[in-house]
Image 1: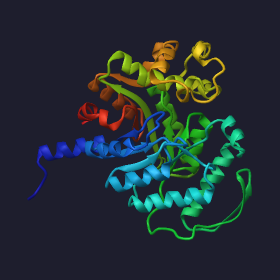
Image 2: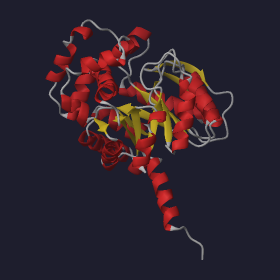
Image 3: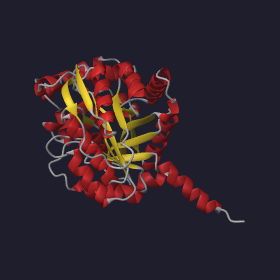
Image 4: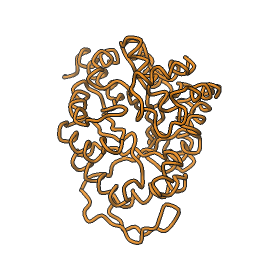
Length: 357
């Protein structure tokens, strides 16, 4: 009678555990997109389950990077965390998604978000209300199935849309980045899952998971079929100043955005006075747009010293590789299906992946 040895079973179990973790290529602001390919190859070699692209218009185009990564790898999932509806016409977005799905042999995941009101006003596009998000998700699903779509509503006017060819492969899942309760419910009701924002505490993550599952159940869907992915800024085995640059730099970029940051602080149950202190920093006075588009990591690290220290600890994973691994498992225990490791690139994650195993 054949069977696996205990060593084999242990190796398989470790591989399965590690597959629940993914990592960003090119986290933050970059001028050169080429390192993304090597980072994705390294993520696959380490045994991570996914590599994610945070689309940034100019140097991190999802279609280009996703296509290149699809040909440089063979098994790892390739996801966007995140892209957006309407920056590409619905037909162009559906075409990109189906092409990437076929090119990667079914490994693509499309993650989209709502962004903030000034973004859409500046681009001359409809605001991303929950109704618009829901309608665009439906339009996208129908297009990638090869259906003809006619639509006239809050998302725009599309008299007649259809893809010329649809590959013989299942359409890619579509996940929605969500923070607030209504958007979390929408992710469970109308999407294939949710991507949670960085700097959530484990308590906030657990509450978010419950809202997504409840939205799925209310829509008559199996709550377990809806995937929830947490994003955790992680800085393993770094000197204090480098750790602050990774964690603090990301924190400042998120917490300097009005309204959005108030919501994030509220979800965590944190006193919003910390936001007032941050925004009164001389470097942020009159700032428009993302802080990481104006300042270096070291400059942002200095600004982050004005944030409450617990905000940088309770919403991230810091310390030794073993401490970071333990912290990431706490996020899994909060109920998420997968975790995106943010901040550190795959080529910096060797000791952490060993600890995660």
